[in-house]
Amino acid sequence: MKAWFWILIFLCSCKITIEQPKPFVLEYPSYFGKPHLPEDNPLTQEGVQLGRKLFFSSIFSSDMTISCASCHKPEYSFADNQDFTEGVYGKKVALNVPHLINLAWNPGPFGWEGKSPTIRKAIENAIISPQEMNGNFKDIINRIQQNSTLEKDFHKAFPNTSMPISRDNILKVLEQYVLTLVSSRSKYDLWKQGRYEPTESEKRGFELFFKSPKPGVQRGAGCGDCHTGNIITNGLFMNNGLFPVEEGLSKFTNNIFDSGKFKVPSLRNVTLTAPYMHNAKFKTLEEVIEHYNSHVFISEYTSPVLLYQQNEFGNAPKLDLTNLEKKDLIEFLKMLTDTSVVQK
Ligand code: HEC
Ligand code: HEC
Image (cartoon, rainbow, N blue to C red):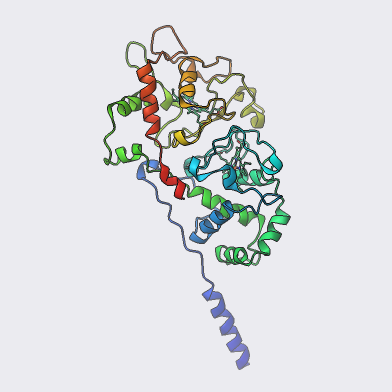
């Protein structure tokens, strides 16, 4: 009887000493607003650290050659500098690699065409897609089980379950790491915090970017009508007048009126993410500005925001920006660069 009593006490005390993961506090400026953090995946220090380790490992790709960071390169703000990057076996991906910063402020869905309802789903798609990593979770789980350090890391990140190495938990730690990729140290941020005085050109570019053009009233480039707020995106899917009109969001909503709609990307770090657009159509920011300035393609699906943009009467949808205005806009876009994300 006595022995049973002590065994019981021993078992109880074991349970109490299981170390719980420590919460990870996401740091960001108050003007970012509240992030969208998934309720079923609280950020923990152990989870984020493990997610980071996996992000840079090639454990997911079928031939163990490719990591998430092969395409989402820190030095390019977690995008890359290729048109259509190669995944496993040299297969080309169908879309330009998007950057991964400040996704915690993006309500989703994710992917250029809204293919993935959550970040976790976008990560799962990257792993299993034959053009990207061609991974298979049975092999991946095996590989992790055979690596004693990784195995321990999973036990630390998920101490309250008997099977910590699961598809769900792998995706959860990767999602946790991606959510911590916050970029908030650009010159634009320093200006907001009163620690940088912009040049005249940067200030003029800022005004143009956020002002809508109103002929006879004010000149503007109207970029901020879609690339809104401090994250520099409204997080919506819109048709910005690219030719030809592709399926875009309609591929997944089956609504014809979503044709040519793609995710409005955040323009933070845009100097690091060339080439531009879902199809890498433009190589430089000058080409992008020229698109909005005079080459917006009008179809029945083009965003109404663009249809009426004009700085001179009767010339919509042309912005008629001067060379100096185009230069100023680019100076403002350069202000959004934050090279500190490279160290994340
Ligand atoms: C071969 C290149 C490649 C690899 C490897 C890759 N990705 Fe991606 N990733 C892409 C492309 C291309 C897209 C855009 C997909 C789309 O638009 O549907 C994308 C989209 C994403 C998105 C959605 C971003 C957004 O803004 O909507 C996330 C998150 C993401 N990847 C994370 C990861 C993680 C984590 C890994 C590693 C497990 C990974 N990716 C591996 C190419 C890659
Ligand atoms: C009607 C909404 C809208 C307006 C207005 C708008 N954009 Fe965009 N922008 C988008 C969408 C949507 C995309 C993505 C399109 C795609 O990839 O097919 C995009 C993409 C971009 C990209 C590419 C980013 C990347 O990472 O590939 C840049 C740069 C850009 N816009 C700059 C601007 C500038 C500068 C202005 C103002 C002159 C502007 N945009 C006005 C909706 C808009």
